[in-house]
Amino acid sequence: MNLNLRKGLRFEDQARDYLLERGLLLLQSNYRCRFGEIDLIMLDRETVCFIEVKFRRSLTFGGAAVAIPCSKQRKIIKAALFYLAAHKRLAHHALRFDALLIQQQSAGIDFNWIQNAFYAE
Image (cartoon, rainbow, N blue to C red; front, side, top):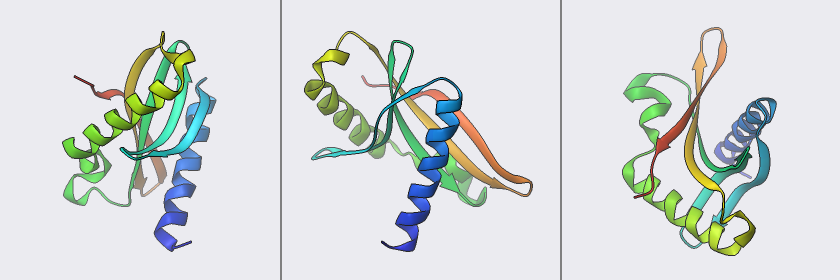
């Protein structure tokens, strides 16, 4: 496993733990299908959350917040719809697309959880 992949999985684990501590339930991590990949799929009460995790070491070039372009958002939305088609029991739940931005700070790691970071149209 290459260094970047190991680092990415480590931060996704931290993101998962951060969200579990806030009451979300894990449905699946690292979901992959022909349309794309979703880092975390979690349940926040009656809402299915599709969560993109991004880590940035510095704020150069906008930090983690600018790392989810529209093209990536479209892939996540298509993958989410594919996931929901295969998991019919979740059909009555509301949907939400979140971003969990992990930023390296001088004092450590900063988590910024953006609920409804983008929308499916």
